[in-house]
Length: 468
Image 1 (cartoon, rainbow, N blue to C red):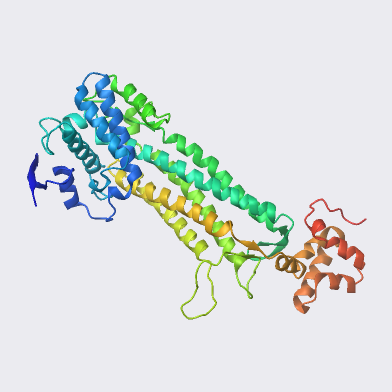
Image 2 (cartoon, helix red, strand yellow; image 1 turned 180 degrees about the vertical axis):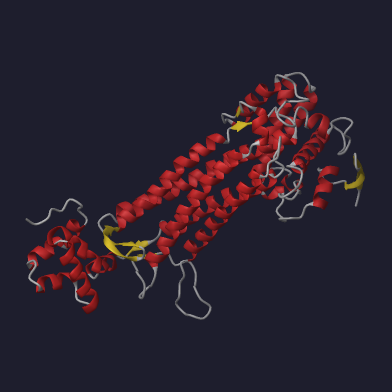
């Protein structure tokens, strides 16, 4: 295999001639094997980094510190990455020491060698265009890496919000379709008071609507970058006009209102913005898991459970029990939510470990955050498309659970009082008789009055008046 020689201050290495990364990436590949998940597995992160590097090259050109031919070649190389080329060249493990330096250099080296070839040179001929001196000009890992995480997270939050809107709309459709289907409400897995199946799905939709609002606010936090901070926020080795120009270039490239942090020193060492976003993701995951689990319980049966709804039959459920179908979509969604909840702990701990002017644990934050965004988006889509959209209701089973329930005795409270109602409930539990029959036997109310009280519309009316 043909090779080329590259060196850094540690020494010289033989690099395969066909790869576009260089010596520092090669060392990182040898050092880090924690997750076996490479940068190339997160193409949206590579695209975000390329957008940052393009903005940097064009800003350095505008402020007069980078020759136009070099800047334009780098910008063109960035465009190729943004278009999805060379993704396989991003080989560094997502979990790495060095606060993301290996990722930054993987990007710098690939961009440099793409640009060198476009300029008529060979890969590795860094005397014409250098990964550090030119591609990384006016930058540091400590501002490009967290900024790229934010740009990538902003994009993925947009994708997640679209998936959440889809799920919300599917839930609202079911809420409207089932608005007149009376069912038993339950608290602590015990019969409570009647509600409707439509109310249940409308409540689920309200969860998602609330989380959409939270995540929209969190997405705006991702628009504040620390580009121009360089090493610790002081802007060392950076042109004084660069900070404002690079943010303007980011806006032009992405169409997003990216803007500089008010305090670049604080922004370079503080990763609490990621904790905030992750907290919102965790909240959405908790609610989504609750929805998925409620659906499992409502679907339970088909003959010995609640049987209020029918989830779509997706696959055989047992290797030994013929005819068994499991609620696999809801189960998978729950597992996905647990990963998001666990990732939130990782992000919190990595953020807490920041010391002095930099947080060295940002790669852990990036890995956990990106996984949460991808998994939660897929979970939202999966529940919407493979569970909610095609589920059906069993209105008669829902109604019978109400009529056979002890819980409906609550509807007699305004008329009979708590003591009599409790006595009816006790006898019903002991004998298996219906609440209405016991009330009739005791002569408390007429059959017509009992029928009126137990009418679904009256049981759902909180304004029912007590009998005088």
